[in-house]
Length: 400
Ligand SMILES: Cc1cc2nc3c(=O)[nH]c(=O)nc-3n(C[C@H](O)[C@H](O)[C@H](O)COP(=O)(O)OP(=O)(O)OC[C@H]3O[C@@H](n4cnc5c(N)ncnc54)[C@H](O)[C@@H]3O)c2cc1C
Image 1: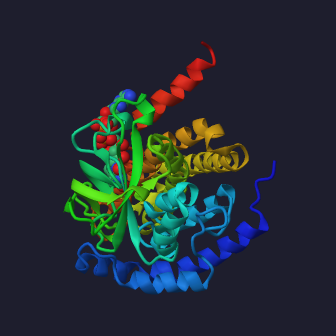
Image 2: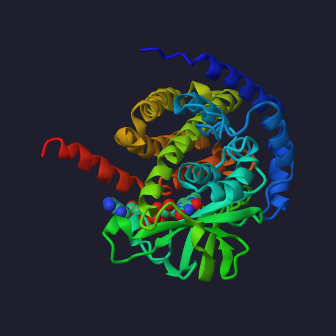
C-alpha cells in the first residue's frame, strides 16, 4: 500500500498551496469587508481571483472526464482539503464550489447535448452560477420520496408548482439556472415518481422569496440559501434531465461526489482550526503560564491531530474506492465519511473556539463561521441519522 501522492497530485498541490499563500489568504480581510457590503452578490474581488486561478491552471479540478480537469477522486481529495482552509473563497475562485459542482456533474453525466451547451458550458467557464432545488418546507425532505413539487406534462411543456427552501446559491443574482426535483408521476413505484428539470431563473412564476439564515449567518458570499416558490412555471419539455422517473437515481448519483468534496474541505477547515488553536494557546498566558501548557488544552490538540489523521485516511480510502469500484461500491464508505467528518470537525472547531475565549465566537476569527458550516453539514445532503440508519441496515443485512 502506497500512501504517497502521485506526481500529478504533488504538482497541483504545490501550485494550489502557492495560490492560497499568494492570493487567497491575503484576500481574506478584504473579502469579509466586500461581502458585508455586497448584499447577496459575490464580493467583486472573486473575479480577479478566478482569473488568476484559471491562469495558473487551477480550474474545474473537481470534474473527472473530458469536461473537467480529468482528475480522479483520489487526486482531487488533497486539493479540496487545501481549498477547505478558506472555504468561502478558494472553492469559488477555482470553480470548484457547491452546488455548481454537483450540478455540473449532473449535466455532464445526464444532460442532453443541448442542455450541456446551454448550461454546462457557461458553468464550466464560471460565467454563471446554479442551484439545486430539492428540499421543501412542508415535507420531511430527508426522505426524498416525500418531495411534493409537481411537474406535469402539458403538450410540449412541463408545468411546475411547489415550494422549496434552503436552496443554496439562489440569492445570488448570477445564479441563472435551477435543477428542480419534483414528481412527474405520483402513481409510479416510490423511487420512480421523481424527475429533474432545468428551470432558468427568469422563467415567469419562479419567485426567489427570501434568504434563510444559518445560525444567524446569511452565507451571502455563497449566494445564501433561499426559499423559492414555483407557481405555474412553464418550461419546454426538453428541459427534463434524463427520462421521466429518473430523478431519484440522479439525486443519488449527484450526492456521492458532493459528499466526499464536503468532507475533504472539512478536513482543511479542521487543519486551520488546529493551527489557530496552537498559535493562540502559545500566545496567551493565564495563571502564570501559556495556555498551551494546560494539560486539558494539550489533550484537545492531541485528540484533534489523531481525529484528523483518522478522518483523512477514511476519506482517501473512500476516494480510492470511488475511483476503483464506483460510487455504488463505495456506498458504505461514502456514508461513513458523511457521518463521521462533520461531527468530528465540529468537535475540533468547538475546542479551537474554547481556546480562543470570547474571541472564538466573534467575527475577528474565522472559527465561529467555520463551526456553523460544519454543524450545518450534519443536516445538508442528508442528516446523520438517515445515513446511520441506511449504513446499519446494510451491515445487518450481511447477517440476516
Ligand atoms: C446550510 C444548508 C444548505 C442546504 N442546501 C440545500 C440545497 O442547496 N438544496 C436542497 O435541496 N436542500 C438543501 N439543504 C437542505 C437539506 O438537504 C435538508 O435540510 C436535509 O435533507 C434534511 O431535510 P429536512 O430539513 O426536511 O429535515 P427532516 O426530513 O424534517 O428531518 C428532521 C430530523 O428528523 C430526524 N430524522 C429523519 N429521518 C430519520 C431517521 N430515519 N432516523 C432517525 N432520525 C431521523 C433527523 O434528526 C433529522 O435531522 C440545505 C440545508 C442546510 C442546513
